Structure formats: C-alpha cells, structure tokens
Image 1: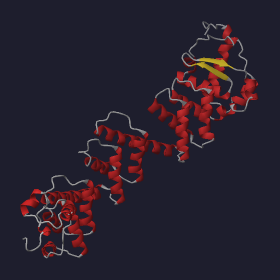
Image 2: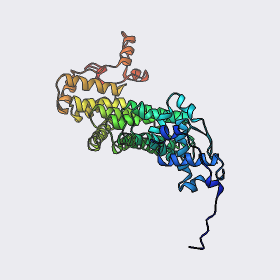
Image 3: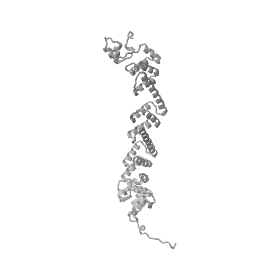
Image 4: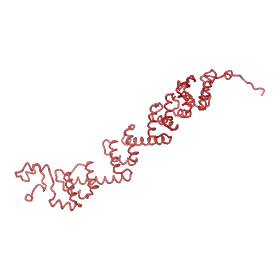
Amino acid sequence: MSETVFLKNKELLEVTPVENIFIAQFMPLAPELAVKAYLYGLMLLSGAGNASEDIAKALGCSDTDVLAAFSYWEAAGIVKIIAGEPLQVQYLNIKNALIGSGANTRGAVHGGYVKKLQAVFGTRVISGAELSKLYDWIEVFGFEEDASVLIAKHCLDIKGAKTSIAYMDTVARTLASKNCLSFDAVSEHFESERKISGGVSAILKRWHQRRPPTEDEIALYEKWTAGWGFDDESIDIALSKMVTAEKPSFGYLDSILEEWHREGNIDREAIEKLQKREDEIYELARRSFKLAGLRSKPSAEQRMQFSEWCDKKKIDPDIILLAAELSQNDVRPYACMKRLIGEWYQKGIGSADEARKYYESGAFRKKDAKNGRALNYMQGRKYTRDDLKKLGISLGEEIYDNDER
C-alpha cells in the first residue's frame, strides 16, 4: 500500500456546468442513455476531454445508440444534429427550447419510442421535423408504439434506406383509415399485402413477364382472394383455361373468375366439377358442328348457347345432334339448328325420335332468306333442277312440292 501513487488529472477535476432547467424539466422523463450522452457531450464541450473521443466506447454502447440518444434531444429542441457520419452535434440554448411551442416535451414522453425508431433507421439521422410526423402516428392516429416502429421498418425494407418520411406517413394514414392501429393488426395487414404481392408476381412469372406488379393488378388479386374468396388453387385452374390465349391478361382472368363467382363456384372441387361440365358441353358443340358440316370451332358465345340448351332448358343432347344432322344442307346450318331446337322445345318434344317424326311430318319448314329472295325474283318463271343448281340454290326438299320430288 505504501507504493500506491495517486496522480492528479487536471481535466477530471474541472467542473461541467449543467443547467437546473435540464435537471428539473428534461432529465426526469428522459431515457438513461440519452441523459448520459447529453452530459458526456456537455463535458466535452466544456473542454474536459478530447472532442474527437469515441463517445460510444466511453459510454459502453453502439454508435446507433448514441445517434438515437441525440435524436431524442434534437426532438426535444435542445440540440441539433449537423451530420451523421461522423456524428456532429450542436448544443442549443436550453431556455429557448422551453420558450418554444412545447413540442420539446414530446421527446421526453416518447424517449423509448425514439430509441426503437433509431434502431430501425440505423445510421440515418431523423430530423426534428421528421420525428414530429412520427410522433403524430401515436398521438394523433392512435398507433401503438411498436406498430409505428413496424410501419417504418416495413417501408424501409421494401423501399430502401432513403425512403422518405412522407411515404411512410402515407402508409400510416392508410392503415389508420382501416383501423389497423395495434401491432398485431399492422402485422396481419403487411402479411396479407405480402401474400397478395407474391400471388400477383407468380401470375406474371407464369406469363414470362419480369416486372413488378401494378397497383391495379394488386387490387384485382385482392378482390379475387379477400373479396370473392378464391384461393391460389382456384386461380391456378382459371390460369390453365388461358393457356391458348395469345395475350393472357388480368382482365381476361378477371372475367373467368367473375363468372365462377357469380355462379357460386369458388372452391377447387366446385370449379373442377364446373370445368368437367364445360368440357362436356364443348365436346357436344364440336360434334354438332361436325355433323352440321361446319369447319369452324364453336365460339364462346355458341358454347354458352349449348350450355343453355343442356343445363337450363334440359334439352336431350341427342335432340341437339339430330338438329345438327338435319341442318347440314342448309345455307346457314347453325341458324337452322337453333330454329329446329327452338321449335321442338316450344312443342314440348323431349326425345330425338319425337323430333325426327315431327320433322319428317312436314310440320317444320326451314327458312332460307337467300333462297327465298331468289325464288321471289324467279316468280312466274320455270327452271329445271340443273338451272337451279347453276344459280347456287339449295336443292333441299323444302323448296319443291310433291310433284317435283
């Protein structure tokens, strides 16, 4: 013990003046680290120590913690952060801060909030004006602190470190309008948003489109899922219907899903059953067209007509096939099919045998506008069968009387 020597350090024996206003008005509600940082910086300003000293190391914390501490005091109005890297802080007249609008007390009340925000923003300096908007999220909109921090983090994650507070404020206002104010509600909203964006991106990838989804596309996907109740499996079936489309689009996909939704078919089982029925209708239409001598494929409108005959009017498919067969020599086979089926339906004919008997009885006469005009023109003149063939007039039995047969 006799070997112990005490060295006098002049700088440490000097005094750092601390205003009573700080002790009485600011210190009681401030976070511990914020108080330490302020006092340590004040000491450096008074000349006791090296101004370039590593304050984070001295206080046993990180650079981010130091920045958060001084951001807290900047919001309180008693310091101003000039730069972030390296950190440059200007101490202001503490009396003037109290004379101001009173906004300085917000920093004291929300010290923990500011520290959480600064941890999210990292080395980026949050100005007093920016903090004022962030305070509004809690004080005006009613967000939980953790919910507000989550909003800021979400925006930074998707838009980058330089995302403006104005953009974040827009997101916050949107959430507030939906009454998503708690941490859980905000988390759920962002998770739903992520799924929707991922679902739209998957559709674009399927169409080999390498671009971000638009707001309109996201809105459509949200309507299909959250609004109408379709899941990804159901949407995938709708996409498979568009394989042959030259230019698949969200509008076309929307029309398919809208029809299914209108009919109450939203789950996979119901859609697969509907799809099977559509395939059966298409096959009936294809066979009918072949019997009628039509080379074109049934259009969407024509397939709807076949669906109406089968599913709404409950017409026997054999009757439809018979109508196609009997229409093959008509100038307009499809129109003739419709007239035949329409008349048989009105007469209450329920089988192909009844329909054939009715047709062969002569009760039904096919109408041919083209031949009708030609016959009117030739009224009073006599032509042989060969003459009529040369004129391109159908030789169907309905044109001639019994003697000409």
